[in-house]
Image: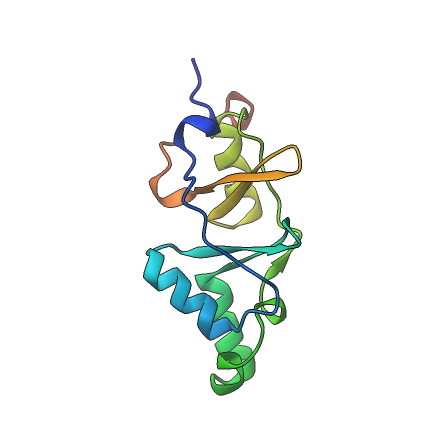
Length: 130
């Protein structure tokens, strides 16, 4: 039987608003020891801000402006998500195909967890043929 997302997702969600400064989002990530923050606006998921986004922002803005720029300037808007009853293989396929390591888990319109590629037990979905 395939493992489902609900069984392995992280529910320790670190969230920020789109106007949160990048430096504050980075501090929240560091404090919580996570590689991403989920960006909520009026309770709805509007984006994800990851350690890769921090690096890109510093490269694009030459460091100092990135410290005082809002997360909305560097986050991924409307990120792909997955449902809690999907298989872990499906979640991994989505992350591998999309080239990202963090995946918000949505149950209907509610953010309920997050997946991260690094510690997810990987069993490719049969459709992937690996």
